[in-house]
Length: 128
Image (cartoon, rainbow, N blue to C red; front, side):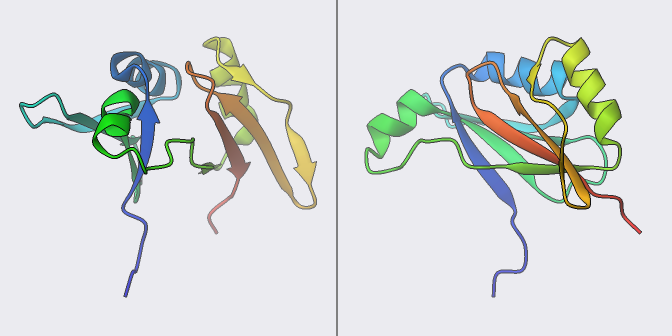
């Protein structure tokens, strides 16, 4: 039985730029980096605290050549935060394109775009 999502694979055109975006602007950390010596390199990143799932940055062009049947579109990722307004201000101050905070019933959400135009969403979820 599957008991948890382990990693989300994100296909990017420029891994170095993607790492800079996620670490310098969003505040993630690089957990591991591997290179198979044949051009395949993957970089695992995750939030710096309490991360149960990580994102692996894969080279989109290389994956397309190796496995043309793979859908390389952006997965729809929803992140949780305990202080949505603070995160919104932080990302905005670092030049990240962020959407307005929207109230959806009892929840608040906003979206942001990475350096390659991939869309992500964040929801305030307070752990009780």
